[in-house]
Length: 361
Image (cartoon, rainbow, N blue to C red; front, side):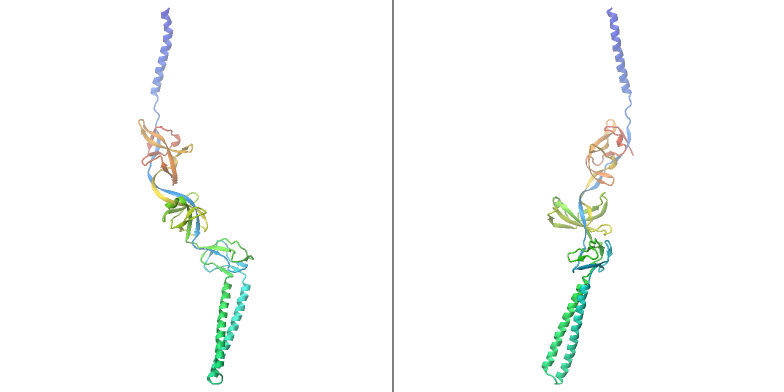
């Protein structure tokens, strides 16, 4: 009876042993995952600038505010905003009738004084002849000379007064002080204007400067010759220049140091008082760069995959990086990569850390 009872217990044990043996053989026969072909790029060092961007104001070295020097009613506006004008060109006219009447009156006075002068000149010659002929006294001759000298001085004074009034008349015709572009015109024909009224501005087409206020904490790094890049809102460089002026005072309102950089492009590209972005380049250092397409982001952290050697061959290793500014199609890498690292630049969406890869050219 005991002999036959042991047989059923031995069968399940034998079955389990055979099953375990079969599973072990199956696992041993599973093929290793195939390496994924990927393209790699060796990290090089590039000259990467260390820079800060500030808001700058474009200003013309020659910019004139046109204001009248006399009171009166504006009768003509001969230009429009944006017009190119030449030096001396008439821009506006203030009603000159009252001043013209003053000039005409002064001219009449001058003519009267000149007539008196001419008469006294003739009288001097007549008295001289009479005196030399013994007909009149020396005293009468001296009176005639004195009257001539007085009328001459009176006439010369009248000439000066007439020239002054004519010069004053020129103030009623406002002209461009130099060749340039007309700015905004806030006045209209018929407006009564005075020396406090701004009529317009004239800005020269050249000799522009960028006014940049740099925070005082950077004051120790400011020096003449620092590169400055004028850039668009997308970071595209419009103009390359250098700092050529550094103020010795700090602006109390902005708490910044004023620096200036010449702009070589004309007002066809820039406008006076235009706000632009100015990038001040403090230094340029060799820095690793990585293609933009090689970077992935997880939870706000940037990563790249590096082709690394292991005991199982080449594998993809995920590496966290700290990125700087973009340089063309690359990122500057502040930390996480060094020159000579092989970064994977294709198929990164299919990779996981430790996946086998096969670099291809």
